[in-house]
Image 1 (cartoon, rainbow, N blue to C red):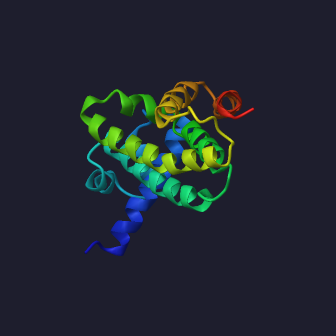
Image 2: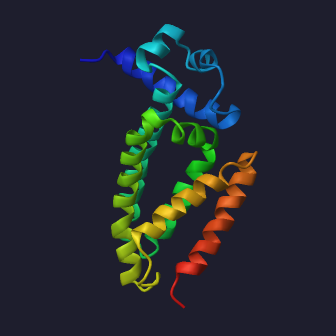
Length: 181
């Protein structure tokens, strides 16, 4: 059984890393993350073997939150659009991590499994949006997968505001293209 202070330390590290990666980029010294979490470097490395493991843990945590968000909007006619916006803005916060983690071949299976979880979550939302006649009948999960790639590419902009403006504009264009007339 994990000790409470160990669980709290891990959570503090995740929160500090998420904030600092968003503010300063993925290559921030890990010592800064440990300092921001008020733990030692030893504690950081006891919880996460390296920067990539920390990034994956952040994504896992965010995916758990995302699953709750999807559950909360699953009955809404525009639930798909709400989820797409939430996902896009979330990626704006993770801009520095996305490219680095995606290009690490060793992490590819973990990242692909998470991506498949996201697509599986979105499939019922897509079907619901189609049933509500909000989305064209020919739109598929593969189209949503392509959209994930576009979101990642737009989030490479310099500042959070540029990234957010870019992804929201891109989503507006995407919505206009997939909505029924």
